[in-house]
Structures are given as structure tokens and as C-alpha cells.
Length: 165
Image (cartoon, rainbow, N blue to C red; front, side, top):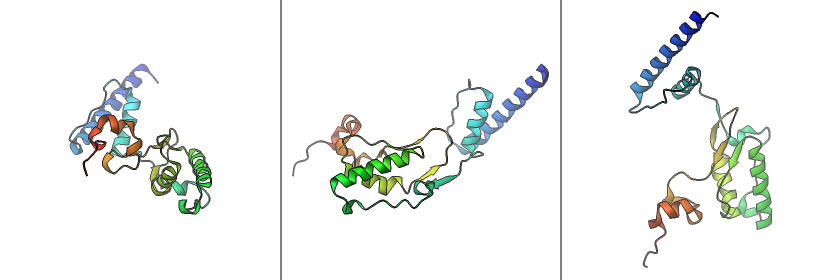
């Protein structure tokens, strides 16, 4: 490819990028993108924003080629529950699904969170990186991890104030 052809190809790519940015700005109230990105990276980012390269999605439990049906927490004593929790966390990690709750959250709560939130969550089928489930949705008032959360204690101390009876 000649230098002239390379320049022309880059110019065409820049025009396509500007078209995609205009298209996004029509639908979004605010859109910002660094202007120092290499054109190829900028193009890929914009296509993903527009959904042109949307990845297929699946429920976490459907990522396995066997029926993932862990025992109910009430059917397990504390030791058996911790073992099942650890097995589930290790199994999920094989599919790049990571459960990253605070270490001081009791095993029973972690296990219940995996059953209720992680296994039925829908995730993109990614080729790189990982999905992390940290249990934080930003709704501190109703969070099952609240009494263990140092971030909430720092950012939302009013949630921890003693209330008179």
C-alpha cells in the first residue's frame, strides 16, 4: 500500500468516526470520547457504543455443559455450606465469573447471593477479561452487605447512626 493510499484510508476512517460520533450524539444527551485514541481503537469503541458489535448474552448457569443445581442453603450445615460456596466460586472462575464480596460477609450470605444473583444473571459472552460480581448495586439502604461495608460507613455514615427507639 502506498503512502497516499494509507493517508486516504486514515482519512476515510476519521470520516467514519465523525459520522458515528454524530449518530451517538443524536441519541445521547452527553457523549465524550478522548480525541487522542488511535483511529482503529476509536472505531471499535464507537461501534460497541452503538451496539454494532454487541456480544451474545447468556445466563451464567447456562455457561456450563451440565445442570448447575447447587443444594439449597437450608439443607447444608455450616461446614458443608462453606465447601459448596468455595466449589461454586471456583467453578464460576473457570468461566471468568468472579464473586468478589467482602471477606467478612458470612458464608451463608455469600452462598445465597451466588444462588439468587449470580447464577441467573445475564452476562456478555466475553473473550477477554472477566465479569465481577461484588454485590454492590449502589442501593446502600437495602444492601445485604451494608453492615460489613467500609465504603458505606465512610460515604453514608447516616445509615449507621443509632436511632432512638
